Length: 214
Image 1 (cartoon, rainbow, N blue to C red):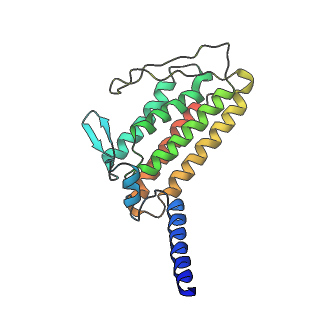
Image 2 (cartoon, rainbow, N blue to C red; image 1 turned 30 degrees about the vertical axis):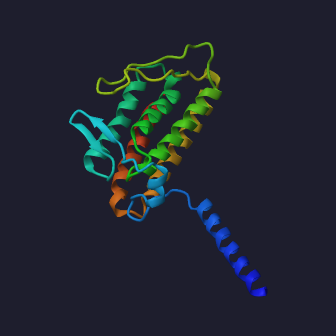
Image 3 (cartoon, rainbow, N blue to C red; image 1 turned 60 degrees about the vertical axis):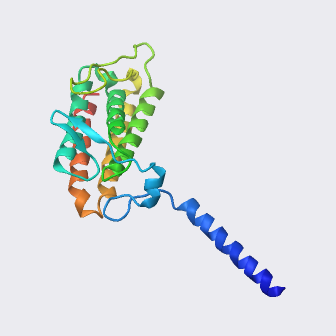
């Protein structure tokens, strides 16, 4: 009888530990920048998307010069697009353009971490702009470069004049944090490090061009 109780308790303990491990072992990249089996299950075994360029679709499964160049070009285009607007719209426009870039990237593959970090930055920038919206000015849309699928941006908010200095400071902090996260996320991967450094540099330089105007 005692032996049966002991066996039952042992089985129950093993099952509990298995459930606990499953609950805390969420998706994450495997060594070398790829995704493990758990990540494949969660993503429905979907392959990483490709990013559209004038030369065609470039794979985002593995880091490469063409893919990284396409991403940094998108970031450069963001600054050019936002410059069509009055400076009051710059912070939300930057957030909207980073949001559009995150939607083009894939959440798995070698650029998966970059996608998550850029997406998070876009949410923060747009939230800051929304909380300080100038309701006396209209929400606007701006034409995007011809090579983009969407012909215009999403609606963009202006920031009220009295809040622009504080909003600029918050936006600069968000961009600095984004650069740091990009660099840290690839620090242990020799394969991804250089590419993430280029993306971080592009985010920083193009954002500064806009934010200095506020």
